[in-house]
Image 1: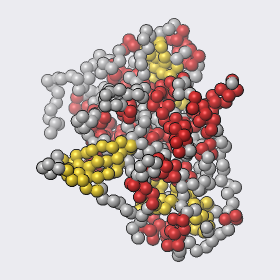
Image 2: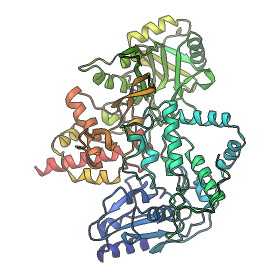
Image 3: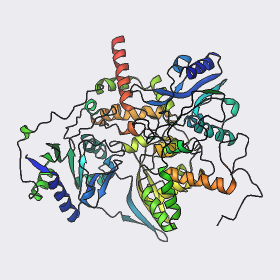
Image 4: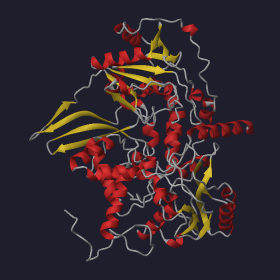
Amino acid sequence: MKQLIDISKELFESKKVGYIIGYAEDKFKRVKPFVAHSSSDAERFVFSNYSVNNLAVYLTRLLKPKESKIGIVAKGCDIKSIIALIQENQIKREDVIIIGVNCNGVVNQIDEQFSKENTAIKCKYCQVRTPAHYDYLVGEIKDVDLPEDKNFAIMQKLESMNAEERWNFWEAEFEKCVKCYACRQVCPLCYCEQCIVDKSMPRWIDSSATVKGNFAWNMIRAFHLSGRCIGCNECERACPADIPLSLLNRKMGMVAMNEFNYRHGTDINQPTLIGNYNVNDKEDFIM
Amino acid sequence: MNTYVLSKDHLNKLAQELLTSGYKVISPSKDGRRFVSISSIDDLVISPNLKPSAVSMKEFFFPKTETLFYYKRSKDEYDLIDAAEENHPQIIFGAKPCDASAIPIVSKVFNWDYKDEFFNKKVENTIIVGLACKFADENCFCTSVGLSPISEKGSDLFMIPLSDNNFACKVITEKGEEFVSNHSSIFTETIDEKSINTNDIKIPEKRFDSKEVKAWLDKNFNHHLWDELGENCLGCAQCAFACPTCHCFDIVDEECNHTCGRRAKNWDACQFEIFTKHASGHNPRNEQDKRYRQRISHKFKYYTDKFDEILCTGCGRCTRGCPVLTDIGIILEDINQLAKESISNN
């Protein structure tokens, strides 16, 4: 922690940053996002297995300081969304200072003790426990017990279903949706100035939480994130209705990988999948 | 009014009787996420130890989407068709005091200058069986908003556990009394109310003084606290939609095709940017700090000014579900601290 605080203080003292987005503890010692505006604020910074939030979401939500940069504390997975935002021209590389953190996995349930069973499934396949891209690197890698991938069996089951069975599965899941849009608000890549669901002239998709409206919302969001989602799973974590949104995003990511050999958020200079046309792109899987 | 003794077997028998006679029987869901209408008594969950469901039971009075009327368009005119009234009698089991008390609180706004028949009919058709609460975590603060784990407010019948398998069931309202007399084969054994021991129900300590909080809110429309809160909040509506007392709604017209459609009342929330956006494009709450201030002020100041009620039951759902862990209990403690400091400074 000392390393993280020292670097942050140095960034403030040298006036390189206007603020740093990081994690701090509240009075019940729970870890939550915290924006430090001074080196004394930075003393509150922590990083642990409970640092679940993907703080990259704040990069497009907060105003950029006028004459300095934004500092951000980020795990390897979160850095993928920072790179994605740069690839999508939403932020400039030179506007952010990334304090990368070696990560030993984060909890699945924040109100329960960190353990093998209570580790986020995304951590199982993580290839960036030591971030691939950063300005500073802090923390140490330890051996960790990886969790079981409970979703894999569900995905296989979904793939073996026919269209009607799959429809029924998702209908039952989406029925629970209350349209609170927590999935959208926590998503670093949901940065549209006006979300399609908020457009009312004309209205493209029903805002009501009916079967039709819920299908429209969740499918549109999945499509908008296909080939873009980096798999931080914040949407699924934030969902009060417990809808397994990661299944959709993961499937779309697998399609992008299998059909186009593309993974978003890995290379700052790589054109985006949707934003780039290649004559060699496969078409045979399109109906 | 009498207090009866009910065993779990009695409750199962009662629920079965109600299901058979066409009641909608509502219980906390097995996964603890919400309240659901059950079709089998195997799904009835009655336990005082449960954590409050992630989403409250308000959807049974104020659905997330509700049709006000349908319309049909013929050549030159519109026909309005009443939404088919769902006049199902319903019963809610396992409502905690922080769930049940929300109904009379919210009733005040739904019966203020306009009487909302949709809400009122559902309340009239519902029997709420409250249940004393033995759960308390750091997010709970019912005792700071004038309630407690044994508050009967909002319940028609109120149950207090006597042992693992037995409950004392107090009749609270006349509606409850009528219900009991209609199911007299279940409600047979009475117990002296005074003999009920509630000592094993821990009453959480009061965390803040709501009057002092309100006095501070009266004077601090502009304060740096709001900036700090606005900076963290991501502006979703998890807090409002999980909340038992948040009641804002939007009205939309939705077409089924070019000749028909419906007008619907949908949940809405003050944390959304477009909530206060005017047709002109002007937005009086254009930043998250203003929107967060609205959330706190509506609950602890405006509603109290207007209806002499706090628009919060201290259930802690908003905090437990908040993706960035904004803790309303801590905020109110902080405001109380600021209030104390400003009193001592004067």
